[in-house]
Length: 173
Image (tube, rainbow, N blue to C red; front, side, top):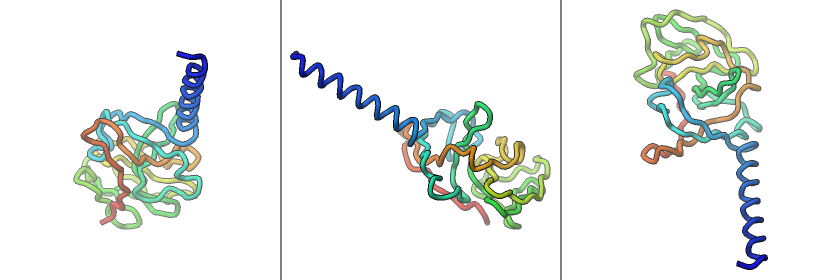
């Protein structure tokens, strides 16, 4: 192999590594789901992509799946309420602005304590897991400030049988 080919190979490899580092640092976060609080949308072991640029030009919306920092942990949950919304848990059911939230069969937990009502503060969101029975979420740790949100989860890339786009849902009945 000639010196030129070696130099080209090293240069191309270095550029690819730099591109991966830049993508990882500024554009995408790669996460592995731990636990079942987002089941059935996300299951333990799913590997997902998070768009770090999603909220540079807009704010989180109801139904978005967001990744956020809580201490040293990164957590993934669904946004169910935005600033100005009134959130309450009565008889184990979550209500947003007086409407029951029922995105899936795991949303009702008659044994869960009551919560609220509270008004979601400015520049905060209220998040819950899709499997509300197993989820530790805003009912436990409060609303999430925008500045703690890393980005919007948008794609499952592993395992192969689960590859696909993550959809936003409204969740209100």
